[in-house]
Length: 270
Ligand code: DGL
Image 1 (cartoon, helix red, strand yellow):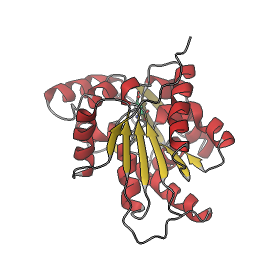
Image 2 (cartoon, rainbow, N blue to C red; image 1 turned 90 degrees about the horizontal axis):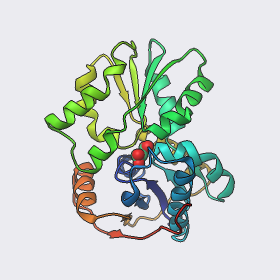
Image 3 (spheres, rainbow, N blue to C red; image 1 turned 180 degrees about the horizontal axis):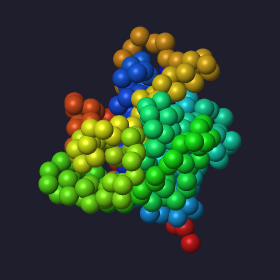
Image 4 (cartoon, rainbow, N blue to C red; image 1 turned 90 degrees about the vertical axis):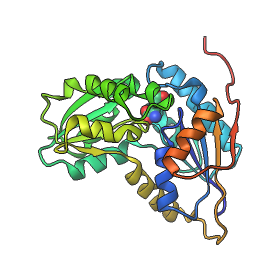
């Protein structure tokens, strides 16, 4: 099945998931869309997040994708159920896979979650974790400064360290042994987060588990690509190409082709 897997995020964060999809499913073609122009989604209302996500989805449906990966925790928290009900292709998000991965790793059942304000407000992670194990103690923390920092390409250095250190102060007394990076932008500053928290806290990013789940769903639905041709991925951003290119090359460790700016906005929310 040569049709592509659609991958969406509010910006560059979902590229961390796209990268893992390419690693685990090297025959699959991806079409990635990052709504960089309207990033961050985290502080926005549910209504805006839902509308913007649908605009991304409609754009990708026109490209006849065979499966949708919502590589954005914020969009997953507010739209996964609706999209799964309304689309006639398989749809997965990143929250359930992230929760599962964290439960595999924790030894003391104390799990922290950092994410955008929207994701933390939704309580989607807490629900996903306690649905699997009701004894899990969850410590949630919104880190609203991380996404704007990453979208500006600030991924290392003193300024980034200071922002991360200050933002994570509330976790100091939490006794967590596992921390879910509940935003797909955060793996890009994973080294700093690890340095601030120390090696005794295991960091979980949902990309590996999400890619594994994608692979299982494709196989189950007989949707795997069996063509021998190397897949030609396509990247779209609603924002500027420069910074998107810089961060993409940082993640993929290679130059990317087929990157285009698009407009997906339909109507203004009143
Ligand atoms: N990368 C996104 C997430 O996983 C969203 C960041 C944002 O737009 O605030 O939540």
